[in-house]
Length: 178
Image (cartoon, rainbow, N blue to C red; front, side):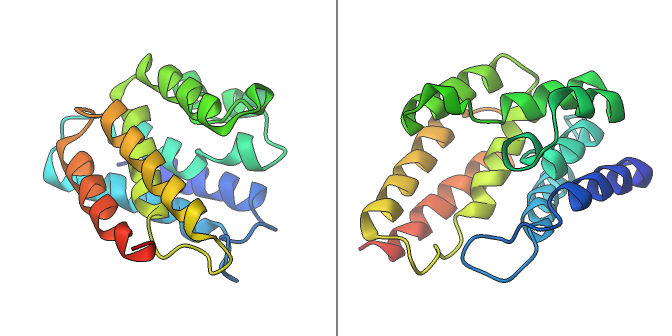
């Protein structure tokens, strides 16, 4: 992993997410994106069979189009096109309205690109399957759990380590609604 690529991506993400907090906490959103990047780095420690530079940059940037004023064109200008295309695939199309349709669309777009894009989605959901925010209802927690199962199924085979880790997180997450 080229440290310069990591530093460039996290600086961009830090600027874009500067006023955003991790839901249900007082932590800056960089905590989330750096945790997603750490999942990618741990997967690389287990098997060096993917482009770690591409995956880590997308991990750090995966929410900038969805959650900030960053545009696809801005990403394309600052990073290579593969990074921008991956981040765009990881971004929900809110014009579809229904959350399940948005997720299905995103997973479809993810599966058309390199496996690294799917790996970032796996790492993102692994990171998000921590204790849910206190204000989530049991029903929302169950829906989030079911979404994680769909993600795991749709992205099976992208990376053995991340697939296994997500399946373990899904099993552990049941403690929050049973």
